[in-house]
Image 1 (cartoon, protein in one colour):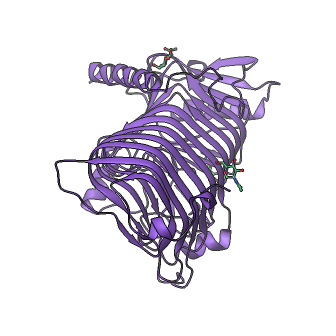
Image 2 (tube, protein in one colour):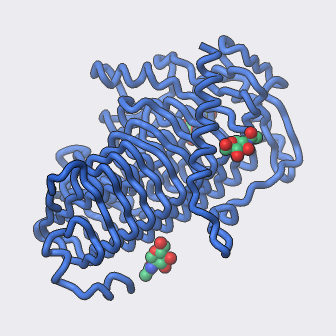
Length: 448
Ligand SMILES: *[C@@H]1O[C@H](CO)[C@@H](O)[C@H](O)[C@H]1NC(C)=O
Ligand SMILES: *[C@@H]1O[C@H](CO)[C@@H](O)[C@H](O)[C@H]1NC(C)=O
Ligand SMILES: *[C@@H]1O[C@H](CO)[C@@H](O)[C@H](O)[C@H]1NC(C)=O
């Protein structure tokens, strides 16, 4: 078991290295990076989880050690903050909360592993923009690692692993025995200046990394791994958050690799906090669902999104922009550029009929606006179907622009694009898309 873990961790590092290797050749000008948004900073003080009674034997429960160490950081505040060092070893623990001005540092060979004791898992209030747990009514289980209302937090190290041991949770989902919505692996709520790098995230019970109501979040040089058949193990879901930058990472999970969201139906509309200024670049990975997703929960609005240099293989849908009647909100000013995909079910899907509702209180007349989505420089091989672009009757999608998109299908059959309630333009698209995209608008208005 330990050996297997060591081997998977080593594999993840190799895959991460591959992901980095896939970065396009550095141009003469320096490549853009997220580094400046929340710079890595050194802490003046270093403490070890061992000083707080922590035992890394894979058997001792270390919840109390983490709580004591973090309480100590919070209450004996040192100027410049404190680094909590987690040495090599298997550190079994229940869920715990982070605090401001701290670095959680996972040494090489460090594995922070969630307890499988779901009975004593703490519960939390639902997020106001969701009104209830995402999968069950009422509260929801607290994230395995949680930061709430904090700032200046770094999670980094030498490629150690945070393992959610999601199997017990996935089985409860499969057997329909979940009392409340499953925990995320890492969640930040109302937090700012977050930096996550050089960590492997594994087997999340639910979504892996969920920044919600946050700003200034940098996530780079990470790997996220979960089995293909694990339910709802989204990689990174920036949610009602701004200035989020995700780059140079490998993600292979059972659900969308990156999905930008902003709350659910009437609750998200009332909360009204958009996701804005999100950059996603140099991501490699695979999933039975979507590589790059927006939605379907976009009730607070999603705008100014840039995704570039994305490398997908064996994936259900390459690019999936999804919403639904009742969501309200908007999706605007989205650019997705430089996507290579191989062996995918559907290349591009921009649709208005995806996702369920929190309860009967949603307003079916709350129609989302989708305007200004540009997808360019996409190269797909082994694509089963090129795509669907289907707006909502009464709220057609506008300025949907495809440029230099080549989706090579499997075999010789030609599956057509499906389009309804959409306007926009297309140039250099193979197979040629629907008339709605070619004739209604001059291509120049795609870029303004
Ligand atoms: C962590 O993994 C990355 C990617 O493989 C590698 O570049 C980096 O050197 C590793 N860091 C350490 C401390 O091993
Ligand atoms: C962790 O933070 C949450 C949210 O602020 C809070 O409800 C919970 O009581 C905290 N848990 C501990 C052990 O401090
Ligand atoms: C559109 O989004 C990009 C980020 O992707 C941003 O730089 C640009 O200013 C936005 N345009 C408008 C008109 O807001």
